[in-house]
Length: 205
Image (tube, rainbow, N blue to C red; front, top):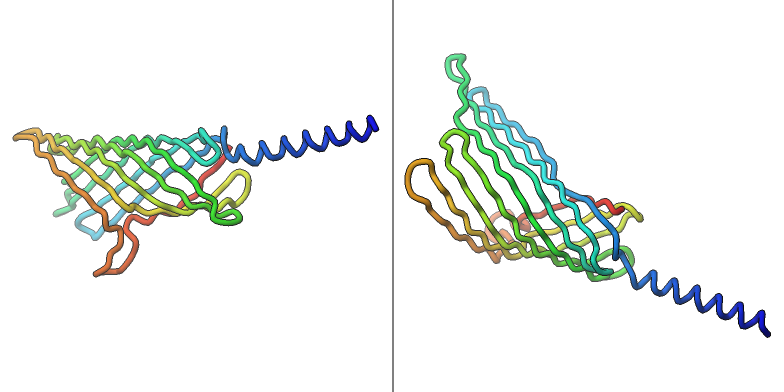
């Protein structure tokens, strides 16, 4: 009888531990993602180059809720060659910081739907004119996430609604502020593509 009670107690403890582990989900898990891109175009007269390095790190504060922070830089340069002489006609650099929060919902198996809210902030400078640009926005993006294994997922998302305010502070002249709002992510009259579609991988650790 004592052995039966002991076995029952062990089984109950095991089931409780497994249930707690399942309910825990990804809580306490760190993840890393980001953007890395390089581009170049040269038509013989004008050469443009660009690069972006924006790593993103996040942490699951609850079983299906994560917060993250992206910090990086975007650079661009334009060079014009005339009569064998190359001149830099444009050069920009921008520092980006983007906090975000994301909520997940299981839709079957290893597939998850998520909603993300982010606050992208960009601080740029034109190295030729010395003009400065500051942009602050709010972006709402739905997406899908597929868990490949215990350390990697593949995700895709697109911007559903975004609001951005940009202030240009020129080296000469007065400041100007522009406000933009977009709540139509679909190109219904052109290519009929989804606006701002993003595909990438996320590493869990």
